[in-house]
Image 1 (cartoon, rainbow, N blue to C red):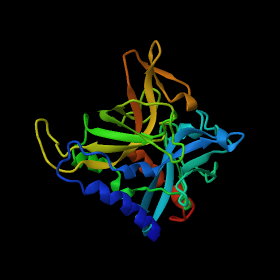
Image 2 (spheres, rainbow, N blue to C red):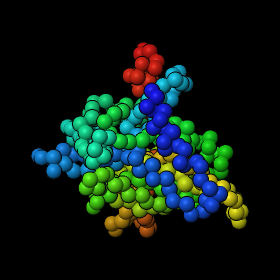
Image 3 (cartoon, helix red, strand yellow):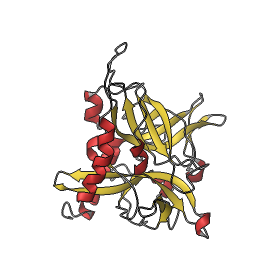
Length: 303
């Protein structure tokens, strides 16, 4: 477990030791190292095709505080269709190799070992798998940096706060090393209601391209918490959610996911968009704390 702790510290320390000049500081480059690409195998290795993004988290359970469990997280629709059927018999994970630092497609994913939301499987576009890629050069986001409902309330996080997400750019995913793109936006809508197509989403004012599904979304809010207030201090940083889909146009606005993993579209509006749908972190926590996953990990006894 010492290795887990070292990894967590590597990503935490640079994030919270910023100077007071917090208005325009760049994001910590380390957050990109938690990202991996979900890859569809080709006939040959050169034909392997990245189709989505995922990332790693480290989670401590109250029952096992001495241990950190590492999971790979991605959007459910990258792997499963609307009926719950797997889209692919096999998928790979593209990461940088620890030994030579070059990209490598690792055969690590078990297609029958995914865990979804137990009570709202259709409404929550997240799946996780316990996974620690020991031969890869990666970092994870630790539980203590999740933007929970409690933090949102305490820090008065809301509409207009800045965030960013990092994920696959299919045009240039990285020739020798994976090169996730970082996109910036603002919180546009926070709701606990289901959308018209039965999904739990928040919405952010940010663009979205094929391959972004499953990307981690990080809060990057300024210390200023009131209109007209100017406060010097570090950014409020943490894992806010997971990219699911984008609202895009045809003749009417539709809730869609990128074309490489598109599921049935649902009409929801007729106005202009440019909005990305994300799944808030609370639903990831639900999955991690679910009885099925905790039983599989041996944290609680099976019924």
